[in-house]
Length: 123
Image (cartoon, rainbow, N blue to C red; front, top):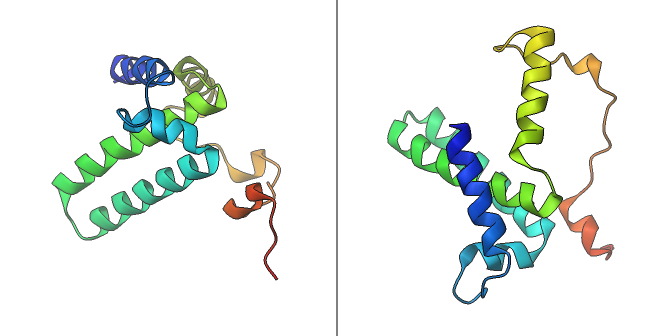
């Protein structure tokens, strides 16, 4: 799977210079991180809904969309797949491949509304 994501990452990087009228990826990259994050969240919710309703084929398709949108966000954030693989390797060494790091291992992050990046407060 790593090879597939590495190829997808390279294709997304290549699309950065493409015409947004001809490339959905270029259009998404130019839309900004807030739009990319919203698309990622939308796909994640679709995976959850399909999983809860037992729609296996839909989960597969929406998971592919989720990975695509995650990869687009990685490119925008300057994150390469190798950075994620390194973190996964680090976690595996500490806790095993099937374990997630305990929440207490991290400081709580402040939640920020997606609209906060626009700078306008609604009253």
